[in-house]
Amino acid sequence: MFSIAVLPGDGIGPEVTAPCLAVLQAVGDRFGHRFDFAFAPIGGQAIDEAGCPLPPETLSLCRNADAVLLGALGGPKWEILPAPRRPEAGLLALRQELGLYANLRPAVLYLCLREASPLKDSVTGGAFDMLIVRELTGGLYYGPRGCAGGRAYDTMVYTEREIERIGRRAFALARRRRHKVTSVDKANVLDTSRLWRSVMHRLRDEHPDVGYGDMLVDNAAMQLVRRPADFDVVVTENMFGDILSDLAGMLTGSIGLLPSASLGDGAVAVYEPVHGSAPDIAGQGIANPTAAVLSAAMMLRHSFGLADEAAAVEDAVMAVLAGRKKTADLAVPGDEIVGTSEMGRLIARAIAS
Image (tube, rainbow, N blue to C red; front, side, top):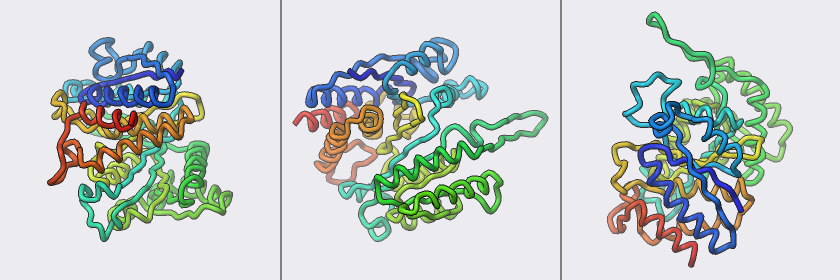
C-alpha cells in the first residue's frame, strides 16, 4: 500500500486533483496496487479553516506519507494578507520543511499536439522534450527581505552546497536522458551566479560523459523560443527556473500540460501541476487536469519506483489526446472539447483497457 497526502488547495486545485485520484485508482486496479488517500487543507483553504496557510496537522500528515499530491494555491480572496500569511507561503514552508530542493519540470511537445504550440514546426521540429531542473529552496524567494520607508529589498543568497546538490541531481538526470546539461545563470552581473558557474564547472569536469554548456538567462529565454529541441536538461536557480519553466511550458501549447516533482534527499516528495489556481475558471468544470495527472505519473516513477505504471498513465494521456478529445485550452478545429471530469474518466478508461 502507498499512502498519499492529498492537498487539493484553492481555485481549480480540487477540480484537477479529483481526476488524479480516479487515474491512480485505475492504475491500482490494473496493476494490483492499493493507494491510501488522506486529505488535508493548505493555502487559502487552510487560512479559512485554521488561520494559517500550512497547519501543523497538514505538515505532520505530509511527513508521514509516502508522497504528497498537491492541487493549486492562492486567489484574490487572500491577496490583501501580508506575504507571510498568504496561501503561497504555505507551499514555500512545505518545501523548506521537507527539504525539497530540486524541482523537476518537464516540457514536452508531442506530435499529436503540434498544432497547439505557438511556434512553427520549422522551429520546434514538430516535437521537443526538455527537463528544467530548478533549485527550489534558495535564492531570492528565501533570502532576507524587507520593505520600509519607501525602500524594499530581496536578497539572493546561495551556498556552494546548495548549488552542488542541485547540480549533481541535474547531471544524474541527464545520464538517464540525452546526456546534455545547460546551466543557466547571470554570471556577467551577479556574484551568486559566478559562484554557481564555478561549482557547475567543477561538476562538469566530474561528468565527462555528459555534454555541458553555460548560458546567460536572457539568452536562454531567447534560445528556448528559437530552438527548443536543442535543450535536454536545463539547470538553474530558483527565480530563473520559475520564469523559464513557465515560458517553456507555453511552448508546448498550454501550461495545463505541465507536471512537476519537488524532490529532496528524504523520503517524501511533492507532486503538483505547474499552473496556478486559475480563479477565473474555478468551478466551471473546464480546467485541464492533464498536468495534475502527469504529476501523479511522476509520483509513480520517482517516489514509488513504478516505472511501468507511470508509463501506462503517460501513454493513456497521449492516447486520449491523439484521439482528439481535449479540454478547451488545447482544442483546435476538429477536436472534441471535453470537461475536467470527463478528461479524467477518459484517461482512467484508457489505462484500464
